[in-house]
Amino acid sequence: MIRKIQKTFQWIVLLFFGSTIFFVILYRFVPVPVTPLMVIRCLQQAGRGEKIRMRHHWIPLEEMSEYLPVAVIASEDQRFLQHHGFDITEIMNAVEEQMSGKRRRGGSTISQQTAKNVFLWPSSSWIRKGFEVYFTTLIELCWSKQRIMEVYLNSIEMGDGIYGAEAVAQLHFGRLAQKLTRANCALIAATLPNPLRYSSKDPSRYMLKRQTAIMRQMRHIAPFR
Image 1 (cartoon, rainbow, N blue to C red):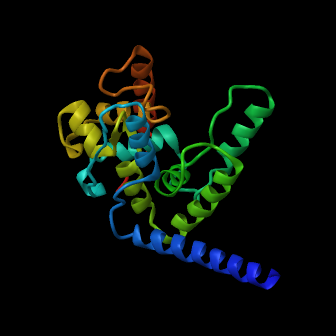
Image 2: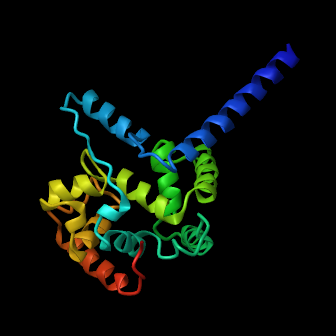
């Protein structure tokens, strides 16, 4: 019985590593069609008796405004091009602030957020964090920074039922993602901490302040291509 359990466990481990490595390599080359969060949001909408809302249209990074990667780097992860998936400085700052009793904040990089969005579920737990470390390491090893950014900007939630740059550009700004202005991109980036609470279509005064701050930071970020 013990040997049977051991063999079953070995097969489970092999299946896990084999399947995860397969999908990470696959998504290096093909668009990500759907993410766990998209499915969860649709189930939540159905559970509330609402019409299913999911706007998602994949486009290459070259068909997005050149300002959009710069805006999200300025807002979310200013050392994106320097680190290898984990920003130790931001992680230590987050730990120190938590220990001192300040408002808890995240230290997640764009790479970590991409790993979570594409492969994992949204709720936070130590188990999920462990898987996040694993998938972040995999995509940093297998994908270029350009591919990570492309997947991130196509998959991230940007509003209620809105996923990715092209969908938010058309629904909130009435234009293609390639035609987004510097101000448009800064406003989109400003919503990313909580896109269901903050809107790039109808921004509050707080959002406009964040937009201005991000535009100032964008001056110090090199063009991303």
